Structure formats: C-alpha cells, structure tokens
Length: 333
Image (cartoon, rainbow, N blue to C red; front, side):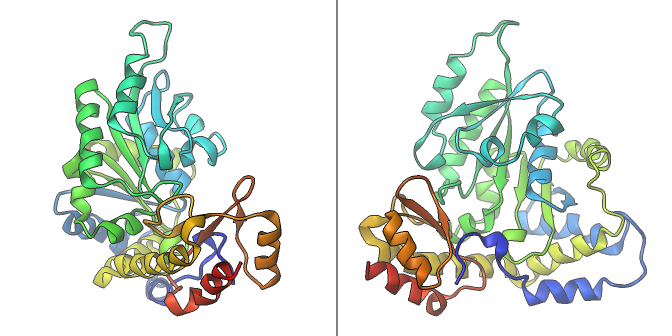
C-alpha cells in the first residue's frame, strides 16, 4: 500500500476515456477543438474571464507563470520550503532567465502578511539590492496546510500596495478548495491572485496541468515562452481533453474530497504524532526509524521526512476503507 506520493496514483478512468475520445485527426498544437474549449470552461468555473494554457508538468506551469510576472533582474518572494525553492532544480531561475528567489519563513510553509511585510522592509530600495516583483504561495502548502480566502486576500492587498504580482502554486489547489468548501474564485482572483498553476496530475490526471491567467494580458507572451521552453506539445488535444474531463461534473473536486477524507482517517489514528494539522491530503507524523521499519514490513510505503518523521500522502483513489489498515497499524505502534 503506497502512500509516498499522489503523483504515483493511477489515472482516473474518466481521464483515460477522454484521451481515447480525443484520439482522432484534429488540428495540431493548441488549435484543436478541446484546447479551444478550455477558456470558456475555466471561465465558467471561476466566474470571470480567464486565459488557459495547458502544460505537461507542474514545474512548467509554475515557472512559466513566474517568468510572466517577474523580469530577469528582479526577485520572486516565496516560502523557504516552497516547491519552487526546494524541488524544482533551478527551473524558476532558468525560465525567468535569472530572477532571484527570496525566501520567507513561516509555520506550516505558510507566509503571513507580517512576515511578508518584514521581508519587504528589509530590502533597501537601491541598485545594490535585488528588488522583488512577485510573490508566489502554495495552496495547499508543502506541509498540507491551507490558506483561507481571507489569508490570501491579506497577502493580495500587500502585493497591490507594494507593486508585486501574485502567483499561486496550486498543485493541490483542489484539496484546498475541498477542505474549505469555498468557491474557487474566492481563493484566487477575488483575493488578488493573478496567475494560478491548477494541478491535475496529483488529482487523477495523466500528464496535464492548467496554467490560468486572471490577468489575461499575460497569456499571449506566455504562449511564446511555452513554445520556446519546449512545452508546446504537437498533440495538445490529449492534454486539453484531460483537463475538460476533470472539470466535467466537478470530478476534480470529488477526487480531492476523497483524498482529503482518507487523510483525515490517518490523521485521527496518528493523534498526537501529527506534526501539522491535517487539512488536505498530506499527513506528517512523528515516527522513529524502528517504527518506520515496522510499518514498511507490513507493506506500507511512504517518505521519511527528516529525522524521526514521515510523510503520508493519500490520493483520489483512496477511500476511508482503503486507508483503514494503515490507520490501524499506526494506532497500534
């Protein structure tokens, strides 16, 4: 039973069916009928006009967005544990042609308005220091914590006051919305977010992510950046078809709710072992090496997370019954 990453989960049958339905002759690149429907489909979901680009990886979605928001000589503010800082192999600097990442600390990998304000005040406004031009936050965060609409809006207000563009890494955006029960718009453009990397691969997709621009003027230039970066697939209809299938009947939200509910079962069983509140589909628990070995001997797979800790990730295909054996095993330690 594998709980090391939702990236390892199977593809949802509806996504596979959509790929098969798109397996016909059509226009190449992003000129096909499926790609053309993305803008209206996502605009309806977010209740505002949006421009949508499909890409094949979350790294590409994040870094193309940051390249659109930040010039090469400036900086992007992010959490010290943000995926763009710790797990994207220098891709943000590569895609932006050298923009600097400036990190901010915060509990649960969340940036607070106070922490952002302190970081901004510490930067002198002269040519000797790199000036920030954008902020990126992750929702849900790298520790499974969720920003509320009010928290995002507070950061958005600071961005406007300081002339910063605002990006959200939403690799697990669906899990955040499922946890909050809010409208997707309240967590994004209504709170000041200008670009969203809307993750689908972790939530039942095969190899398609959506890059959304609420400031639609950013899209045309990013299309050129996507081509230059090698992410304009010639048969893009297969990516577009996946995204549309996930939007159909709110499958993206149903899948996230299943994963979140499964994580809650594990979190309750772990009790005081939990290192962070369980708000999305990741559970971080205190676990000694001997205890980790005992769980693995029983057939459970997961990441060690530093010394004496582990990360357990549930996926769309898990339900409360599927994760009960793991929950029972943790409770019995």
